[in-house]
Image (cartoon, rainbow, N blue to C red; front, top):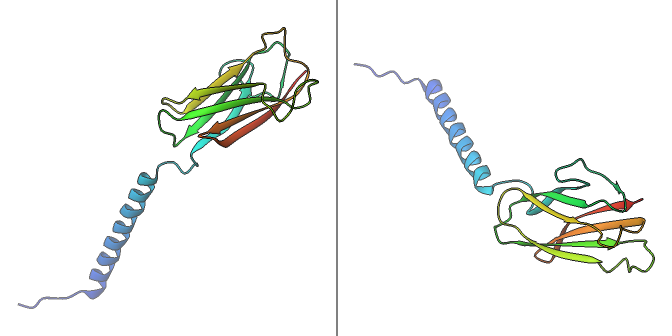
Amino acid sequence: MKIKFDGEKNMKRSRNVILLVLLVLITATLVACGSSAPAGVSNLVLSSDKGGASKATFAPTDTIYLSADVNQVNAGTNFDIKWYALNVSGQDPATPFVTSTVAYSSGNNLSANINSTTGGFPVGQYKVEVYMNGAKVGEQTFDIQ
């Protein structure tokens, strides 16, 4: 009895096995790493209603809603939301006129809002900044007209 050795067939089989092992390793690495987005927030949106379309200009009496996607953040992480009036008479543009803390619990969205309790926001340019554990992770400017 003779055993026939087919070297080319065995080499192809070995190459296929190696490629399969590499594919499994790459897939496992990607799954272990999770999202490719950096930790924090992305897609920061300001709107005049919850879940509304992004706006850059608001009326003085609008409630301004902030929403953002949350990426790779543990439950219990605190986000500080700081609202600034950039060119409003009597307001220091370097000092937030409102700061709030939002504790992230779960899901993939962060939300906050602000409204004026004194008859409306003064006309001008404003900015909101989002901080996670003391580091700024997002900002957006907007106008009140």
